[in-house]
Length: 109
Image 1 (cartoon, rainbow, N blue to C red):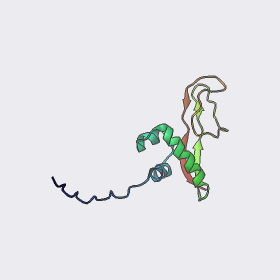
Image 2: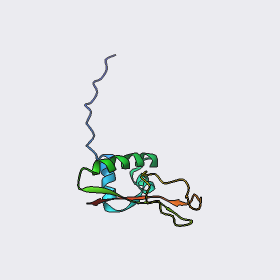
Image 3: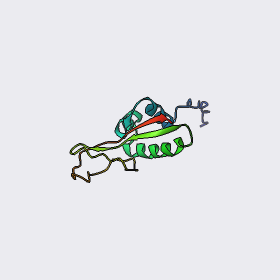
Image 4: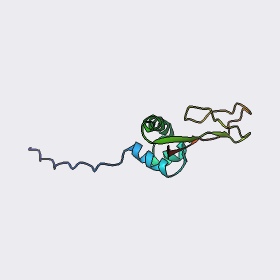
């Protein structure tokens, strides 16, 4: 039995990359990693990896990744000196685990 020839495949139109979509969201407003993962439909863990890459790559242009630090909901302690993008597990002052997520935004320098 002879095989029928396959119809030619039509390539998918080029879509916006994940990081470009992330840039677009962060230029409009300040968002947490949870908000970004819901908007982009990716895991929150992956959002932090993309944000780290954006932080390094934006340093060469005129833009900057602004980070509003995490804050303890119990005592109000602000994690201002934290370099990591992920939220901390516990507050060093009151030892509570109720901590708001850091928020991210892209601004012009």
